[in-house]
Length: 614
Image (cartoon, rainbow, N blue to C red; front, side, top):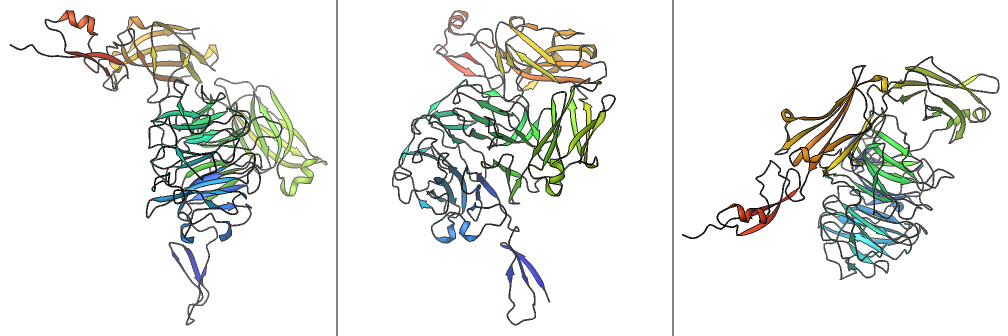
């Protein structure tokens, strides 16, 4: 007689359908298809706040139970709430101060809220009460100063930023930013607004089409140009200030990787080993470390598959913290590190709710050739990728480490010892055993050692990394040096070459490829004199081949521009400037204008002709 059915709201069940009035129960815990917009972790109080679609979001006071109605953020159905919560900001020095913004889709309105008790109660601080804001101000992103809980910046959807110095009682439109599409909709989780969490008061705004901005007061923003950030078409980007570090701000740009600045965004450098960062967040740092934990969903050097990685040393090294065989169903949408527990991280999905990951008990660390592997009771198999050409087992260090919950073997593990058996050569398998006081094996871990099948190859031009993105490019003038580095042993290098291929109408002309260098050894540097080539756009390719038959190649777009204004790009008809033109034709041009080439992004002078009257 038991009957089940499902609808938009979840799963229902009655234990006796034959009754005149069957009693239906909703089995909703863990079943609602929650689409997560945003996550925020608090350094004290509730460890997590979530902003989701349809049902606003929740204050998660515990991670061991489903949130109740009392935990829900102000929802539209209560008459004074929102449908979606898009952004949540927690004041660093006193997490009782929490701000959030959301929207109501049916009438395209929204609200902003403030809490002074760590999200247990909320007060509206939005356009309904503030005539200085437009009526359609909704959703977007919000940030609170690192030095003043009343100083906030709100970046609504399809609006310019607004600023308040009194906790949202009055608002003023900021200056310095003119692009109003920084937050185009509520489905994109990109974080385009951030603020310092300590020390100097500073707000940051970024969008690929608008650029990078900062403000020391939240009201007057200035553009920061030529700061090392590449041109980008990233759809997902995450701008975050590092907790506890004054002026440390990082930006992830999907396939262009991860960038970090230690001077309030004046200069950015690329985090070397991050090849792709689709999602990015900070969390509580490792005990004794000055750095917060950094998390990415992406790819790092030495890993062929995408995963979630953590760095505890400012991005110098990364470890995988997920099993590549276990993913997230409907797709990961937002990442947040826990601010109270090191190693704990949250993943918000596009329809499967929120996942939380914590380190399993770690009993040892095996370091092989500088590559570290944390050994856990939860895993038996590991892999270490060594540089190309490695045949001998490099120096090995085995360290006893005790972190995290060990489970039922904890007592024995605390008194255990380690032993390791190494292979004769690479490839091979190192076997690590955790031994109890009586010598019995409590756990066995097998660590496969293998060398990269292709060499690692890096190239720089004129002191700058060879561009890697589809829109990145370097403008070169005069004689520049191309420096090439590789992990391939010299005896395994068969040939090295550097070549230029012209680009016309956005297409690479491979048939006109020009060889700049070819040799059997790795040169100290290859000198490239731009005056030997026509101006315009080229693909610069560096290729290394080995005696084993493997090869590696790096290609980047460069623009040769000898005269700063006359690139001679063959995708257009380019003319010289006024002095040349006026003496070259029987009648002078009416005007001289500057144009931009859509192929190489250089500029040149172009005449406008006025035919003489007859």
